[in-house]
Picture 1: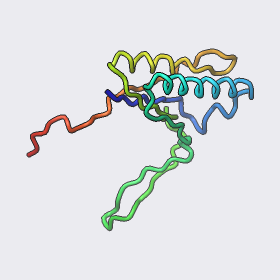
Picture 2: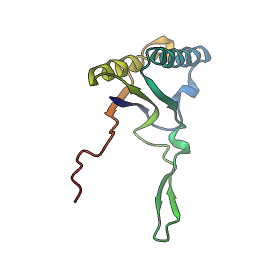
Picture 3: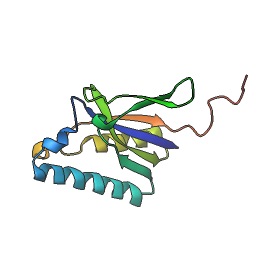
Picture 4: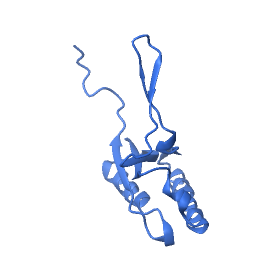
Length: 132
């Protein structure tokens, strides 16, 4: 089963990691690289990416003429999606274990950040094949 693990981080402007000491940021990046490598070696990683901050985000919808209408940026978001992993694992419990490990990414002073990781199963088909 595939699951998407979405890493949320506190909002309040651009990424706070930009304000961290260089050594703290280096440890954080090394953790993330090692974490992805570990999942890859286990055959569980489908994909993973970090995302630009909300100060670069736009909300897009189509106007009546079908052309895009944008809104944003949203630098004062309460929290925002910082990145994600898609994993292919045997059970939801394994996805939760992986999310808990990601939550421990180090922050300033090498202390765990205890990040919020939202876990959702990736649907392979609509919930029902009985279409109206």
